[in-house]
Image 1 (cartoon, one colour):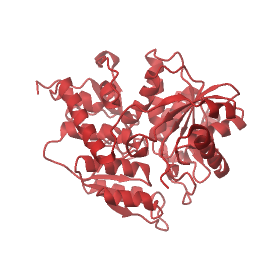
Image 2 (cartoon, helix red, strand yellow):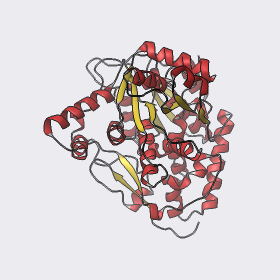
Image 3 (cartoon, one colour):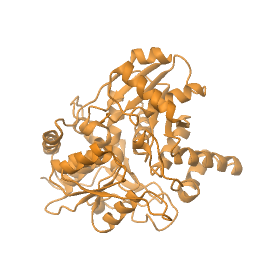
Length: 439
């Protein structure tokens, strides 16, 4: 270790403007301290000053090595006096431990045209295939950013970790926690897949089923998660409002797409549950457009299921608010940030769909996603069960990728957007297949 230096980044709340002092950047800066005190949408967001971000030339296949200058963990390590070489060694050591548990570590995943699928739909479709990533989905990317931060700042203390999830995120968390021999409490719905529960137990997670309680709205798994965090557990989760650092790990997915040499896209369609993946995509594409790596932002659209569509509900309410008040886009976004409960609240019924992985009661990262759609001229859509089945069948038949209904939901959004006339014949579209079929 060499002398400490101030981090070359700023962590601030996108809702209230709170900025973490350097001492807090170096210590669990996961959630805004003002969260829960008012109706503001509090989300800790990383702000990178381009002039202060080291330009690291690397074609390393590990995204957390190649894109380390974008991660809070790297900046914190450098601020604590760790050399760049030492940090890279830390990433590789943790990645080897993950591979020892899961049989694979983090690596650049395929992104290429799906020619026969595109021909079937009359489009040029590119697929980012995350089914071969750690634990079979993109969720581990979100969590690896948090794990690296913990490895940098912690010494002997090792508080337990906690997550609420119905499947892929829980599995990713369990793999990573097992890799570093860390206690993990997982809050799951009673109907979670048997194969998922079996794997969680095998990985040593403390699994807590959370049935719904009449008269208590919201996801019971999130209620249990909040109780655990209040009791001292750390939020090892994929909800950006609960742990802002989870978004930047997800951004590595888009950075790989941008580094692949792929052409520009007319549309990107992203499946949405809690919203962390869409939020990461929105922010990474916006940053690339802002720094000149993209000539223009693609139109970024989102898809949810008929079982629960809190994001599209919030979008509609936000659009209606704009029409009623005559506010500009930016003013309307600021208003929404300060009046969360007018736009986002738990879905009133228990959500059900074949795409179980995107059945969140709330879109926790909703405002960043609304902002990204507004800025890119995107729209939210809802896919019915027949379209979700059709998309998964087309994906498996024409790509050979063993993707689940959840993982292929982005393609269901493409089909719906075609039918609505938003996506036109011959346009270039990117989707993310994330979530391997486990049955």
